[in-house]
Length: 297
Image 1 (cartoon, one colour):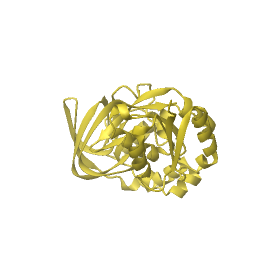
Image 2 (cartoon, helix red, strand yellow):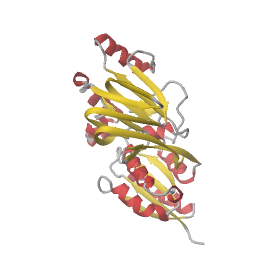
Image 3 (cartoon, helix red, strand yellow):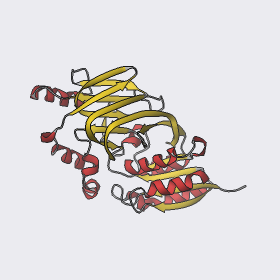
Image 4 (cartoon, one colour):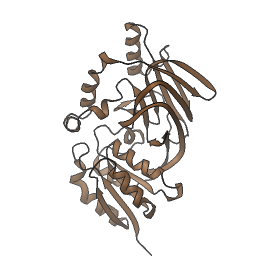
């Protein structure tokens, strides 16, 4: 019988480079599980995407280590393959924030995360399609959404989540308003918004997004949160308080669940997908690819 094949792709610069001290443990455990292992450190942006797109149809397990951006590249590659050719994914988080890993309860300790990636139980996860691209857990525009890709990597490595907060403070005085028409589930909403988030995650930016337990990563639905332009400074303070307390009952908040939505803007708007720059768009079509991948935990 031919040996099972595994591909181990890792970003050596993610977080503080902690995966580099654990390479032997990953490879050794994969071999002990009966896998023939190929190891590929990423060299540049989209390297993970290109390697996985080429090799994924021939393997049974894909192990990925890095931040949310590395995972995003990996999932984008898998989504270009027929569903039956997508291997199971083991994810070893090694970034600064690791929102998706927190959402699916991958262990925080490196040794435990390695064990889960190699021998854990697989769970189905939805994936979002964003025009011609894909996202694992969030697509967002507006206030603060450029913080993750605008923060220098060396600051992330040294300061971790604090680096995002420091960078975000700089953005408060420069909030922009975006006129938008939004369509979903037979409804049309038009207005001026400062922020929009379509997510499949319980954590964004290292913070819990919803206080309740309605977020399920395999239900075929996105959680959507849009924030209208505040009419005065008092309402801006109410928006900030609502975001911190997970209270979205105020006039400024538009919150719903859906499997698909369409957004049209008067001008091109910058988006972030899983913390990486997702381009500028005047029209966005987002839909949920139900239980598109299997991730071990």
